[in-house]
Amino acid sequence: MTRLIAALAALPLLAATTAPVQIPVERLSADVRVLASDAFEGRAPGTPGEAKTVAWLIDQFKAAGLEPGGPAGSWTQPVPLIRTQLGTGAVTANGTAWTLGRDVYLSTVRPAARATIADAPLVFVGYGVSAPERQWDDFKGVDLKGKVAVFLINDPDFEATAGDDAAGRFGDRRMTYYGRWTYKFEEAARRGAVGALIVHDTPGAGYGWATVTAPGGENYDVADPAAPRIGLQGWIERGVATRLFAAAGLDLAQLRKAARRADFRPVALPGTGFATDLPVTVTRAESRNVLAKLTGRTRPDETILYGAHWDAYGIGAPDASGRTVRPGANDDALGTAGVLAIARAAAKAPRPARTQVFALWTGEERGLLGSETYAAHPVYPAAKTVANLTLDILQTAGPARDVLLVGAGQNALEDQLAAAATAQGRTVTPEALPERGLFYRADHFSLARRGVPTLLLMAISGAPDLVTGGRAAGQQWLDGYMRCYHQTCDAWSRDWRLDGAAADVDLLRRIGFDLANGDAWPVWRPGSEFKAIRDTSAAERAGR
Image (cartoon, rainbow, N blue to C red; front, side):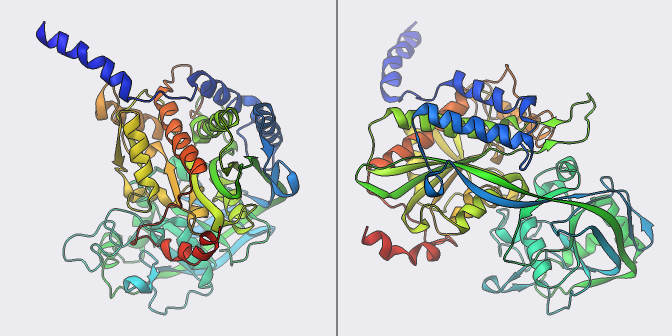
């Protein structure tokens, strides 16, 4: 009895020190249910599903009382895209026929009628990293012109052990940008390769083969890229890659170890090379970012930017139940609903000193294309953008004792996240899976690489410590969701428990509102690769 009385006595104190969440769970669910419905056709850029999505989002902002936030007083920012779709055809490697989707996954962003490679030599380039600042070069001056580069995924120290030259060189298990598939394709293009293939493995990539193949040969790019693009890009299934190397008299397992040494040199695969002859359907479309704002009362040129991506994967091949729409309910209709919720709350609050911008990006699933277009052509200058707060996948399993932080150690926004979490009676847990490189995989990265301090909430960064069931239950949720990642089963469910997601959205609302009402400029930590970029524009902020 004494213990029960003591426990009851503690309840008023808990209520007094835990700030209420101001994000309505029912509205979050209702918004996701609409966006993830079949009527929106999976929200693929440049499709009828986009037109419905953009119109609906604008209606929501208008109804909430926001102002148009795009260029020239519009609600949208144009994002000219090309869409490519590979057809079926012959693919061979050293004389062995490969099956698209099973043995190899391919796509292109080149606007050509066919993707043809005629027996190009295959060259294994290890992790394909050129990082002078880390004293690492996998290429050693080897000419890749006219060749197909074969990469390992992630960083050279991903599998390193004590004694390997790579150990600790790239942050141990925490992925750097050098580990991302986007970097590897970019590097192959810069070096004149005609193709680039990455050996898939689930731990290194952070997702399974089904996620790799989910786009079904479809790809997107901005219509007029400034940098060169690789002619054909893709992934090799790990077992197929092992057999390919063995047929060439090479041991892939041994080469993986060799690639962790600083003296590694590219290895040519003996044989007839890699050949493809695949039709390509090319279409051009103008997709759109959706932008709304609430103009600041006294310092309107200083901007808080909230973001999420509205796009998903559209319509694909039928699943076992015959469903073809990939609705992207959590990725990222839920994040989009979160930004709408913050916008509605902001519209009802007293107008702060600084401007708040609510950005819903296109083309995230195709390579951060919408946010990258904005960052290259900003409506609100990066130097005066105080922070970017991004929502991309939230957990749907109920309230949690903690919030997961992606990219711990990057900037001072982490301190504000910790304070906001404490106000909710929660703690901050650094991401459990830094090897997935999530800091480089969401739309905030487009702003971060321009120096804007960013904060990303992404639930697939680890297992949450759920109030009911703890971290074991959180891991069960995470494992279940990853089976639906980019698949038809990422669908709205009436069984979702969104009080945890609402609490996470409310964290960004609190941080954003504090920044909008204050005069602080969050800074990058001394060890961040983005600090020097931000420092170059310090004078613009000092003069306000």
